[in-house]
Length: 326
Image (cartoon, rainbow, N blue to C red; front, side, top):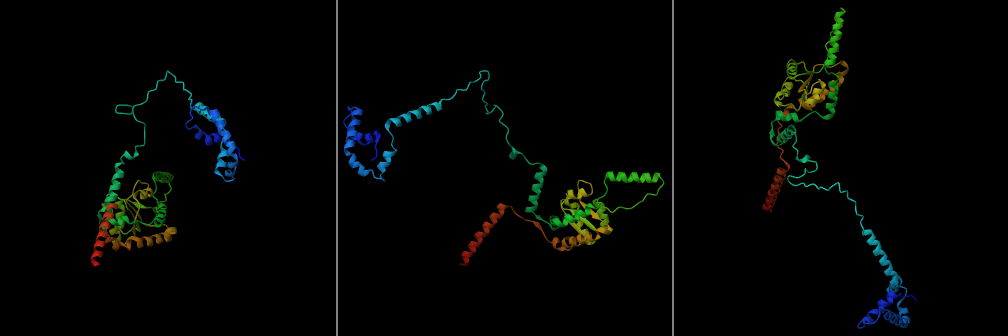
């Protein structure tokens, strides 16, 4: 038989005894309940089988005094935790909170990048690019958007780097050696170097004299009118030409910031085979496609919002046409 503690006994029998008996002492009431429990204990043994919920309640419950004692201990511990240690404030340092209102303290620094304007050069470049997409671009200008592919451009620039003209230091050294040779009475060896030619007027003269073997034009010359006629001249004189990115990259070859046009008049014997392969590829991409490029317009590409509106109108018209057919 499972023992039922005092709290369970009181919870079973106390409610019925307390009705209408407010003057009875609790101790006598509990004793009376215990006597009643002992009298009905045999009948309760049948209820407290192995799977009875009442048995679980009886086992888990604790005596009333033990429960009350632990409850008081928890209350005391919680009260101790709540006590805050008062921080000692130095009276010499007065607390002065900042007021960030109008006329008050300056706010802390933060990232204002989205409020800053882009430089004017960047804004003009972006507007120009968008205008070229929106407006119709005539074929002579549109051909400058079709540049040499990356692999062929890499091999071309490797070839051009072999024929870089001399810079100031190299020229100074050459002239010094020549002066020393003349001072010693020796005949200086004069040998014309094979180098890349640059300068718009100079390159134009070489094309007209049919001395140029390859002409390289930058795609981002500004104003474009400076070189817009050059592809037509090269085709007329049957000289291979190509359009590459960009004028700053061409400038590095001739020790300048930028260069609009470069030209090769001849190459060394060891480079002739590679140079002929580059010329064949360039002719196939530019000279042979000149008639096709001459008829192809550029631009006319609207923005994403305009394209969405146009597609929506087309869907509505297609739906109406389908309804008419049905």
